[in-house]
Length: 517
Ligand code: XMP
Image 1 (cartoon, helix red, strand yellow):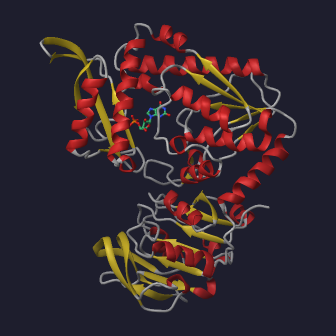
Image 2: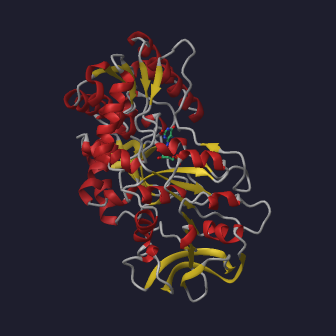
Image 3: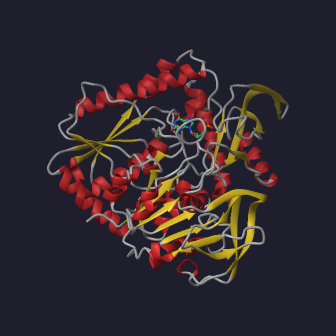
């Protein structure tokens, strides 16, 4: 049985995924579709509710994203947010104009008319506004349900046609009762039953996987990251030993990480676990190479050479599984350079590569293809995958290879692994781990002069990097307290052989990137 569906229609707003996640947090399955999706396709999907996202444009400009009136005739409840709210007014004959004074930030609204959207919400409450246009005249049949000091139509509706509009952003946490407003739309207006529950997801997916796979085999490439680990957990629960996980350890993982992955999966799950240790092969391919792009290329090419060879060896008469998740394949409303347009962009996975032509499976299985990262983690926890793996910070495909500048050697890997382990240990002990999105050590291949006892030393410099970010497109360096930095520096220079100096990277992105290479 398919879940009841809500559609988030994307007009290019920055919060499109956030809206979808909030809807799912309310127990309702939802998918993001471009505003260019044909009405016939929307009708076929049979959603019980539609939410229009915000967007950076002005509705009255010809080149802005617009939508056909037909969508309002489907009889499906619609909630327009920000630009989406203006689209409702504009398309149905209302007026949208530039504000005399743009509203931005936390703004108080006052309710003016009873509405299911504001059920159990105080008459005055704070919402997050971010708009330079406003609805100056409502279309026929609509009335105002709230206003702010500078916005006469902060929200409006036509309940007869089940059309609702909010000029603000209920999806962001700055809107005090935003989630309740979304919940009210979903439950009071659309009458969803709340059938999107992670426990059900596991049972349903396991049953579907069993049905699809039958008595065939499945091969999954395990990276030690969250997505492939959770996919492995689900597949193991579904088909046990019919699953083979191939784990390529190129020797560039963090300290003891390869062993941890092997131990976790062999102990926890019923499956065939194949670990390919190929550090020496990688090191000899990387010998003498210092150019960052060349190093990345060699690591990537070698990795897939080893991986595909192993796959050929295992046999390809069954299915190939991968840990693709929903954000990897969302169609975006942002098509062309103007930030909108007809051409949909499909985001491809960071490390997606094409399968060689001689390898042909019966099909591909992507058990997490409909989940957001938070949901993947929730499933991982329920499957009993250890906390450290489920909450693992992002780790680049080329591993420590992008954190050792210059030539990569066995000794440098060892120094960096030790340094990184000390840094991570101190961050964990300091209690600030959850505030940081990513933190790690870098070996810049710089030696400096130091002094130890009566001796002069000439040894490695270690750089430490910690960032805060929402999406990794931009990032800021984390303000780690001085006493934590002092402990890290002290331990690195005392405990890690060949380290005599420590620096903290205080570069934001842009202009820096998170990784050093
Ligand atoms: P940058 O360095 O581009 O990193 O600011 C942004 C995020 O992406 C991760 N990263 C990678 N992840 N394969 C990956 O799977 C890669 O080649 C790669 N390069 C960078 C990086 O760790 C950060 O989280």
